[in-house]
Image (cartoon, rainbow, N blue to C red; front, side):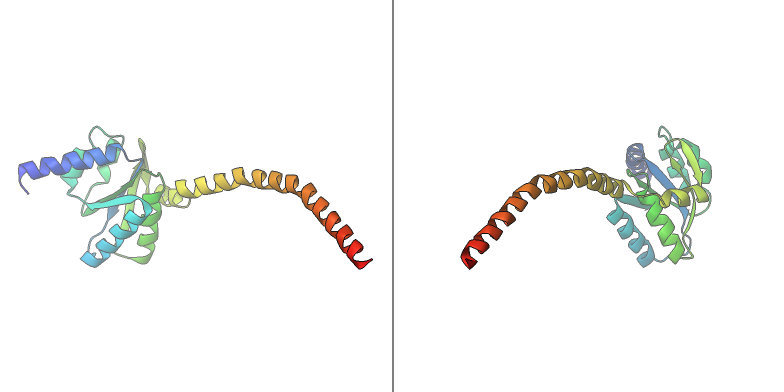
Length: 172
């Protein structure tokens, strides 16, 4: 990789990290290409990104972002996952680490806070932004459904009474 490629990589990673809410630093030594591809696919499906990085380039890319304090985590063969959703990357990383012994979560950053492995694991147990939105929408829609049911009930009762009188008149 020549100097211009390194600069482009650093600039692109820095731009991505500036818009991210969460960064998860991982160790992935010994993983096959198929395993890394599978992990990337799962990250993408959750709205997160995953990149194997050179530590020196990652540390430079962290400068000027809210994740500068995480640079001490970059030792040995590392990779990073990031997402705009503060839970998505953590969920996928922790779930994948449970199924693959070669993949380990070292720590991460949530805003300017540095997280250890337990912090990332605790974060992964929270509901995602999409799940929170769905439950909030459900709570908002429930009263509207009840109001519509209450408003329709008198009309339904009148219709049933009229139907009963009609049946009574037919029978007579």
